[in-house]
Image: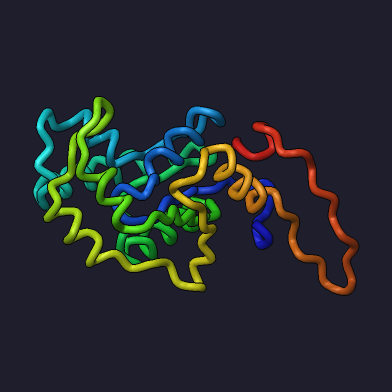
Length: 197
């Protein structure tokens, strides 16, 4: 990111409607770079045998995820957060927490059209249970897209992980924009040691 100190770890925060592909991106990024992940989907699968996707269940997952996030931010390593980010107010809280811990928040907005996202979210698979259609409709209605001040990177939830990763890595390794008194900084090759601490 242009305004980022190269030594600052990132909190990569996925944003999008249910079924957009946030978990897909977050889990693959975590696997490749061995980055810690806080994932509501993974927590839901571990805590509840038959998830109901109701408010009580969401509150339990939120408490567990917040505790894990507080602990993982102590590591000063880049972390992936795939959780409660539908509302701008939620993203502001997470972003502040990241900055207070010495992290640079990086929003990755995974976009998929609602029809395709609904098919994914409401269809059960071995990896995840189906979200009830009425819960999907509620979450879709309450979703607030990132605004310009959040400077979200937009990726398509229908693209391959390799093409999604190229876009995100480009933003992670971009140098600062030099002013008139500075010379341009060369970009180091993207590698795991440079990006993930």
